[in-house]
Length: 580
Image 1 (cartoon, helix red, strand yellow):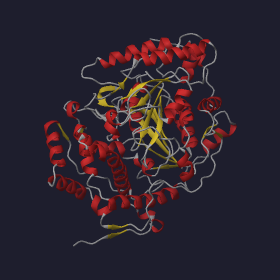
Image 2 (tube, one colour):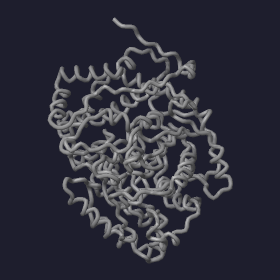
Image 3 (spheres, helix red, strand yellow):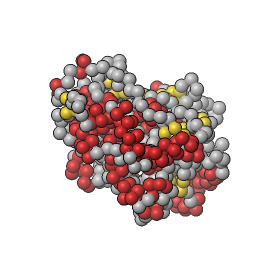
Image 4 (cartoon, one colour):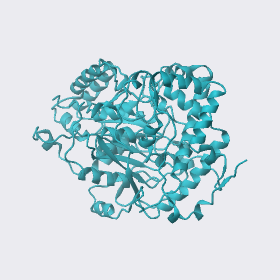
């Protein structure tokens, strides 16, 4: 018999007495034969339960969920009090046409002259082409979407012939790309492009529907049980703006991993160092953008899956507030921690794609009561004043703000996303398809099966408790500032390419600052701020109040401008606009 642990109500916690305790995750790092052997044991009746119960005990998960009295009532999805309006912003109408929102967003971007950059000094320091550069080149007839499409196709085919395989796209039809590019080229010839996104090349993560491609979630079988009949809502919004949707981007299988390892199709490599991971799970989307092959991509983020790879690949990734974008048509459209979000090379391009895809589902407009979506009004005189007025909080031991119960937050998140993922996959696993998943996915599912209904309810009690702490913090600060990840891009063990690996220490470092925005649904953006001593990108994360995407985007743009020079050209980079 042991003693139960009793939490006092969140409102009575003395934040001055909170101590940060570094977390030491207890779990083996396995790959190769021993990894396969471990999975066999973990899935075996009896002994598998013993292994998972041991891991839970070593990491104090049962102590937290089963043996603790948590006084708060459950919060099964994020709930927010009404928020103060953001200053110096432009409202975007959810019911407007996506191309109207995009063209409105364009008017309020910072001043920029594409002509000077097009004809500028080719020896100048590296920078990515912006969406506005592509639009200028098309309008000026310097090139056409069809010409760019041919460069794109040849680059992708080069990738597909690499050994070992490291694909950016796992569903790709050159003729489909040519068809879209030809239609865009014709619109420019007639002088009537649909929006600034017309002719802009974008990749779609393989867990978001993009007709006529299958959505496999980077498995070998999901397309057998789930037919794609039309675009996901977010993808249809991009298509109506004229974007050229190039195919389905590689990912960590079913989004259940943070490295981007995929033994089914090959592991996407980091454009800055091909011996390193991109981060996951949106590995293909981040890498294809960082490589210069696409101006933007769309991914999902349930546990940092947009922000982690964006940070490790040196690009911008936005996780909007939970419910801000309609998830209909994605494999994770029934969870409580996921969003669909844009990845791009610059903050302004992120804003343009965000303007296209935003808009809550009809059900979530009722349940979540979202504030009107806004973007920064950069030309406004109030813009710089509102930037100066922001109060920032550091998310570290440098106690400007104190956030208690970080270990509880990690556990509540893994139980939430794990239980929800398992619920979706159970019917297919029952029919035997679970054995066709990768070994690391099977390890995760074996762990998720050890959670009980009571564990899930306890995790939702913790969610309400943690929401209280953060809403109290947001009374004092506007934005929480953290590193995006606790490490730069990790090396890919050669033995992990064939069968994958499990390394919860790496996952813990990559997710250290990530999960707040998922469990509690807050908006967050990662923006590149420099490089480590090995030349690997470092990202800074900005976490905002609910529905306050404009505030984090405004600060991200200011950080981007401050850290603009010198930018490092990735080892794997293609200039498909000029063809250099």
